[in-house]
Amino acid sequence: MTGFAYHRPSSLDDALAALAEPGSLPIGGGSDLLAGIEEGHAAPTRVVELERIPELATITTQADGGVRIGGGVGIALLAEAPELSAFPVLRAACTAVGSPALRAMGTLGGNLAQRQRCWYFRSRVGCFKHGGTGCAAVDGEHVYHAIFASGTCHAAHPSDPAVALLVLDARVEVRSVRGTRMLDIEALYEGAAENVRSETVLAGDEVIVAVHLDAAARDGAQHWEKLTQRGAFDLALVSCAGVRRTDGSVRIALGGVAAGPWRAPHSVEEDIASGGLDEESIEALAARATYDATPLAGNAYKVQMAEAAIRRAAKTIAN
Figure 1 (cartoon, rainbow, N blue to C red):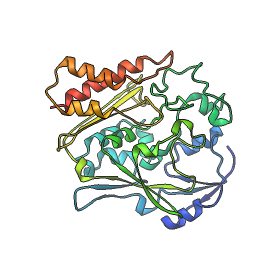
Figure 2 (spheres, rainbow, N blue to C red):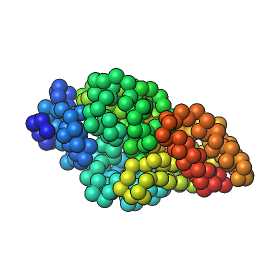
Figure 3 (cartoon, helix red, strand yellow):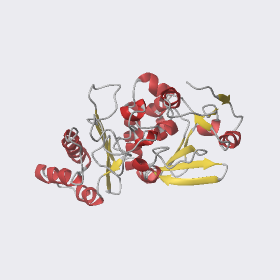
Figure 4 (cartoon, rainbow, N blue to C red):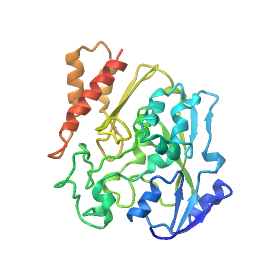
């Protein structure tokens, strides 16, 4: 591990000013950054602690019923937060993250911004994100990789909360000394498969200050499922989040299948929202949702898993 300085800011403004200095990186729980430094794909000259900044560590219910979640709020806290009782799909996704120790250490912002878990990338072997060319997984070991390819990298993003936040139409508040911008979840991961530096669009000096849930996403029918190899402490082979809002509209998303959380085609969601579906119709819709999948030779099984997960989600939320 290379050496680095440590800065504990007195405020969010202090943290942002420190992050504006070249070579600085933010640290929350540290479960991803410290591993990245050891593995050699992160080499900060200074880390800036965000964990103790009050503005990042609170959950606030707005007057209209929406919720603001600070980017530094712990995953374990989110899994049981009473403020999120109307958003059970998010609490379930947070409960599914890693082990109890990782949930206790990890923060929401860090989880959303974490690097991919591809073993070629983590081992610095033949990966274009480490200065190589192409994706070694294409002709190598790729059983856990993406089935919806959107660029050179075929790794699947590991975040569980991101999948739930996608169906909740969450917005991410991002801040630096240059100002504040709001991103939806899909925009946060835009271009992830071609981005050498990161899997998000965050600049090096930007911090996820908060995640915003609108009141319109409260309640309704909400579904979460995570399929893993070992059943616990594991990354998703495929995960599925589904929501039928109180206005009748439907949103379905998958994890473990793309460079970011992947949302089902709108036409599929609209047909599920129409209700009155029999087994044959649900099966056809699930197959249509995965029509554009482009699995590699060793991970076509994920297409079948994805279709099965969508079928179960549709049955739960369709009526």
